[in-house]
Picture: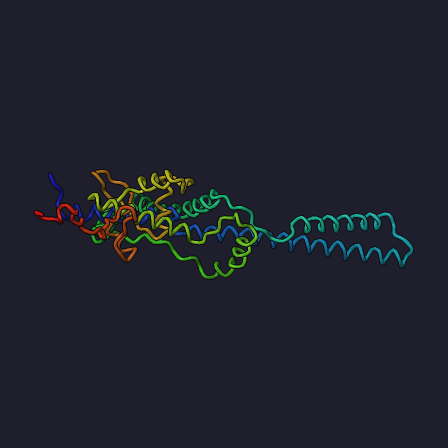
Length: 314
C-alpha cells in the first residue's frame, strides 16, 4: 500500500532535519581553514605564555643574585646559607635563559591533517552532548511527571517534520570569525613565506574540487543521471592521485567546505550522499560545463565535393 501524502511529506521532512542535525552535530559547519587557524593561534599563545613565564623567572633570579652580590660586596662575603641562595639564584637564571634560547621565535611546524580532524571530533563531541540534553529531558519528564510529556514531544516533532516537508536545508559552512582572521593573519603569512612546504589553505583545492565535480555532473547529465554519489566522486579523484587522505566518511564535509551542496540522492535506485545536478547548478550560478574533450565539435565544415564529382557528366 502506497503511503499517503501526509506520511510522505513528514518522512521527507524528518530526513531533511536529520541531515541538518548530523551536519551540525558532526562539526561540519566549521571549515578546515578555521580549524587550522585555531590550531595555529593556540600554538602561538602557548609559546608566548612559555616565553613570558621564563622571562619573569629569569628576571627574578637575576634580581635576587644581584642583591646577594651587593650584600657580599658590602659585608665582605656571605654566610654559607646566603652563598647557597646566590648559587641557586645564578643556576635558576641560567636555566631560564637556556629555556628562552631553546624556545626562540615562534615557528609553525607542519600541521598533521589528523590534528584538524581531532579538533573537529572534539567539537562534535560537545555538540552531541548538547543534543542529548533535550532527549534526556523528555525521557526524565515522561518517567517522573506524565506520559503526556512524551506525547507532546512526539506531536511537536511530527509537526515540525511535516512543516519542513520536501524542502532541504542549505548545509553551509560558517565564515571564519573576523577576530580569528585578524589574530592569525600575520602568522599564516609568515608560515607560508618561511616554509613553502607547509599546507596553508589558499583556496586552490576548492577550485580544483569544484571543477572536477562540475565536469563529473555534466557528464552524468549526458548519461541521463540527475546526480553522482560522493563515493563515486572520491574514487575518481583518488584514481588521479588527488585527495588521498580523505575517506568516504569525511569526503562529503570536504565537498561542503568547497561550497558544493550535498544531500541523499538516488542514482540507479541506490540512495547515498551525493551531489545533485540541479542543486550544483544553483550553487555555481550556471549549468555544469563539460570537460573540453567531451564538448561536441560544431566547427567542422561540410565535406567538399571531389574533383571527379565536380566534373559532372563530362
